Every structure is written in C-alpha cells, then in structure tokens.
Image: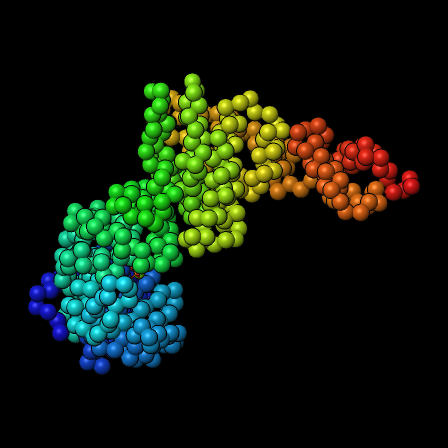
Length: 484
Ligand code: ATP
Ligand code: MG
C-alpha cells in the first residue's frame, strides 16, 4: 500500500545504459506480476548525491525472491542469481553491478540481539525501519508513478542540509540495532555530513549497546571511516559520542595533555588524527592509513617525565609495533603481510625524521633502505605526515630536511641498489667454504658481513664480501675447505 503521506517528486536518474535496461525490465516485471517494486536505500541516496554506485537495492511489496527470479528470467543473457531463503533476499549479478532484492518488511527487536523478528510490511513500514532519512527514500518502478521519488521522512531535505537523522525516534532506532551508531558516524565521515543533535545525543546515550555488535562489523565500519577522505571527522565523532572508549580504548587513551614542572606534551589523540588526515591526503592505501592510526599507539604506555628535561616516550615505536598485532587480532583484521606492513611502519616511523635532523651518512641511509625494503615510499609518506607542529617555519624546515633525505636516498639507491637487497654471502656459502656444519658461528659471520656492507666498511659486492668472510672465518681458526 502506498501511503498518501509520502511526498513524491520526479528524480532524474543518472545511470548507464545497462542499468537503464535492467531497471526498465524490473518495471515491466512489476506490471506483469502486479506487484509494487521500488529502488531504495543506498542506491537512491547515491543517485541524489550524484555518486555513481554499482549496488542497486530493490524492495518489492511481496516476495523479493519471487520477483528476483522472474526478473532474472527476463534479462538476456541470464544473469547469475543467488537466493538467500533464510534472509528472504536474492542477489542478481549483471555486468559489473549487483541488484539486491528484498520483500518490504516491518521489524521488531529484542534487547539482546540485533537480529529482528521480521514480518511482511508495506513500503511505508519498510522505509521507516531503515537507519537514516537519506537511506529511507524510494524510486517507484510502477506504472502510474514510474521514476517518482518517494520521500517519506524528508531525506531529500536532510541531504540538501548535509544532515544525518533517523526517520523515527533515534533512541529506539539505535537501541534496536546499535550498528547504526557506527553507520551514522561512518556516513558523516564519508560524506562530510553533520549528525543532527538529537540523533547524536541518542548515540551517546546508547553507546554501551555497541557491545552486542560483532568485532568484524565494527571493524568494517572503522575501515570505511579510515578509507574516507577526511577520517578525523569519523574518529572525532567516535570520541565525542563515547563510542571510541568502548570499541577502541587503546586509541582513546592517546587523548589528553599532562603538565609537570610547567611542561606539557602534545595531545597525541589530535596529533594522530592530523597525521591520519595528512596520510589520507597523500595515499588511498588503507593499511598505510592504519599505520597512521597506530604509529603512536604506545605513547601512553611509554610516557615518562624526566626531571629537568621533559616528557619522553622512549621505545614507543617498539612497544607500538607489538600492540599492532593485538589490535589486529581483536578487530579480526588480516594477520598476514598487511599486519607485517603496519608493524614495520610503526617500528620504523621515527627513523627518517631522525635522519633529517642529523648529518645524514650513506650508511644510515643504506640501513634504512635495507630495513624498509619495498615499504620505503610508504614510510616516507607516513613520516612527512607525522610533522604536525603548529609552527609553520618549523614544519617547512623539517620538510626541507626531508627532501634532502629523499635526495640522498636516491643517490645511495642508484649507487648501491639497496632496495630489496640481500647480502651477497649466504649461510650456505659460508658452510661450503669452510666445510662447517650449520651452527651459531655461521650466523655470526653472515651478520658481520651484512653489517660491514651496511656500515660501508666494505663495498657491496661479492668479492669484497667473500674476502671479509675469509678473514672472519680465519679469526675462528677456520680454513677454506680447499686448503684442508
Ligand atoms: P554502502 O553500500 O555505501 O555501505 P548503504 O547505505 O547502501 O551504504 P547497505 O549496507 O548497502 O548500506 O544497505 C542498503 C540499505 O539498507 C541502506 O541504505 C539502508 O536503507 C538499509 N540498511 C542497511 N543497514 C541497515 C541497518 N543496520 N539498519 C537499518 N537500515 C539499514
Ligand atoms: Mg549499498
């Protein structure tokens, strides 16, 4: 049943010919089956925002699955259709877009679970159970009002005011499904929208309810915040609503400034957000952005006040790199090379900056190139982003010094080709040369050769390295096998 209270207006769609084709097929199917079908949700919102989207959400008053099967039959060539009977949904994949079909529902919730009891409902009921007014609009695919936008809750106006608001009482909306609190903040960050005051107050009020949401879903939303253009918007809202302290206490602990003997340190929470925004301006890499989030994560653990000197955070990069693993495990983030990359970034994040303050030697550069390997470009982005002083002259000077480090890196790189470098003498070579079994001394010699090259004591080539190895072997009383 179409409710007469829904405001209607024509919405010109900006769509590809392929989308146009499938949407008009759906219109014909609705007519043939005599059911009401609507484009809804994120697809309609993104149409209004003129953000092209590859996911089309369709709601049918009746069986979503039945409608999807009928539509799939009419599209030539037949698209793939996955049916999820338990959820009453179906997913049609065609070209590079996906259409998700669902029957209109009304829902009621139980306090311990975000899984609702679902019953068939009207379009109005279906739209009112959606999370935000901007996500609660529909475009009719039905004869009579085809292509009309049905805006039940003032979503269009909220979008024009760049406002996120729940269609019904926000207190109930968030208590019913606390994931919506994360979604509100994620949309605010992605779209640079503000959250309407009552809606935001209800997030603060219901924050504890987030505990019924799985870590995976929380991490999905966090990732979307981190991937947004200005991630600090999302984190600042997480902080102000009190959610951050619950979902990510390690990060929240960065907040605040302590003063002793008239000396304060910087607020590491806002510093980190600045670094994160700086990285986001320079790179879309989600994992480099995670490295920004976590680069100072162990500052609260390592904070000391040294009399007469001030605040120090010695070793925060080492402790921090260890904490990265704990945090990745908690959020079910990948425990593979992504984790190793973020750990490496956290561990090395002070190195380029300390080089930029000293007279840079070739050997220090070689060592950094060796340790960072392929991640060196990312590391440089992180370090440049880490310069957040309010003193602009200071920032400019640091960045200039950084430029020197970069130039020096190119020079050393061209000369020594240290990126992805492996020391020329392997353990096998050492064992074979001296006819020795594996053992600790083999490792010691191998490390000594590597260090000698990195320190510039010998040149980076096989001959010099081999000669150096012979000397180290001789010091142990070893003789090359041929002379035995
Ligand atoms: P995106 O696809 O960019 O993540 P979206 O709004 O399209 O954003 P989806 O998860 O694709 O999000 O959901 C499609 C639609 O389903 C939403 O626009 C909204 O109308 C509704 N929806 C999704 N999740 C919820 C929820 N937790 N509570 C209420 N409605 C929801
Ligand atoms: Mg979507």
